[in-house]
Length: 193
Image (cartoon, rainbow, N blue to C red; front, side):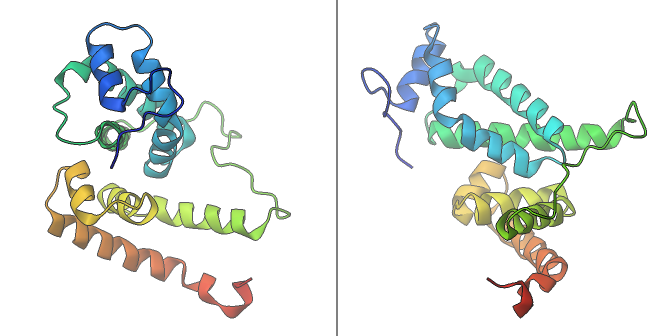
């Protein structure tokens, strides 16, 4: 993956910005995160159960990246390094939530977005796929998201997730099987455009 140097005065790469941040330049990290925020938010959103958890995990990940920027080894792209930190923060939050479940303040409070029936079918399908993704175990969901939704190769996904390539392949296979079973009704001819 190539480093991005677009829309920045002087055209500095991600690695140059990260090094500048580590050297104490005040706005370098903000510029770097501005470049990748949308990707990192979508990664957190797809990996987390709720928007609130995604937001908290992304904040924790960015704080971690901010603090540990000086330890970046440059053996991978900065975007991949940030992606891995976000995925790990999301998985940590999922584990923490399982260990210490929380109770909503109000019984009437709904954490799921309301999906009006007049939305276009693409949005409805996206919601259904997201709900199905949330039923997968976190390790399978992370592998499926990284490989099938983010478009990383299995080798790159293995590096991002810190597991062997065979583990990524098996997690993807198990996750895809579960998703295909849950979403089989979408293959019905009546659901095609």
